[in-house]
Image 1 (cartoon, rainbow, N blue to C red):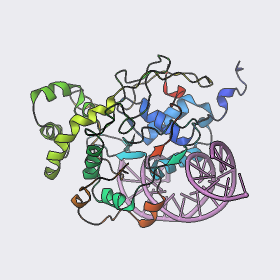
Image 2 (tube, rainbow, N blue to C red):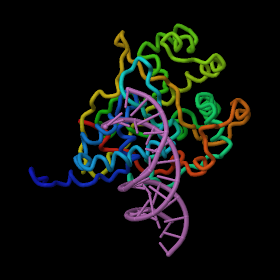
Image 3 (spheres, rainbow, N blue to C red):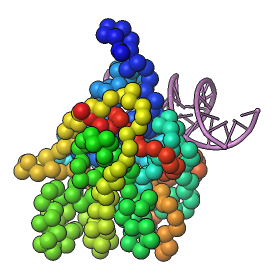
Image 4 (cartoon, rainbow, N blue to C red):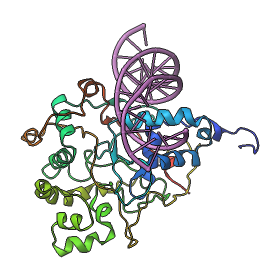
Length: 309
DNA sequence: TTCTGTTTAAATCGAG
DNA sequence: CTCGATTTAAACAGAA
């Protein structure tokens, strides 16, 4: 039993890596994306250990955000106040936490230089292409490993912010808000809707976007059935409605759905490399080689902390 | 100025 | 022990 006043087990360093902690925070948010400050907040709120030496661990945290490709930056809309971008999980980092240890991943996914550079020059284009790639045709389908985020729901029945399953920030629901069903039913082109809502929709991307959005919805596939880890050191905590952003109409309005980071591919994307234009100015050869990529592994689910009480 | 974000380098730790 | 993931430190640029 933890003793009040004294250091208790809860003050010990949590058995999670910064990557895990950050992902927990992001996953816990309604929009599946958070500004840096909210990530800090999330961690400090439930892990007393991180209420100290903030300068140190926050620097490490930021390093992780930048260094790991599993985290992507999503720009704020001009009308959204606040500093910095929103951080989200890369759609393909689904198995990141299935490696038996929350401390470290088993291995990292290496990306080919060509693909890396390709995505640098045109993130959005690459993003869509990338996803188009492992989607429909795949033998694996929606609930398959690729293109889905892991079991965040169903932890011992403890609630998560998204009962219906994970909603990627780029998911249609998060882009156009809850009216999306009506919108889809209306038959209006997605790009029209996006444009109407103020999202930039490059003309040359229209066709791609329109064909892609419907599929992005598969990311919200719920896993469920994930057993609660035996270790209950870190009790569940409650979900606070963070990461929610509204426009003047009170409608949920996530930031611009435009990934900045390169989106590593899990496989070849035939015929797509020719679509980008211009050099990859943001992509230094060194970083291409060193940058970590998607995570891979298997084992367990992210856990306890995710569940708030 | 403080906060964000990127990057390099080195130390540390775990798994095999 | 080695390899590679993670952590820590630190320099630095840029935005709010």
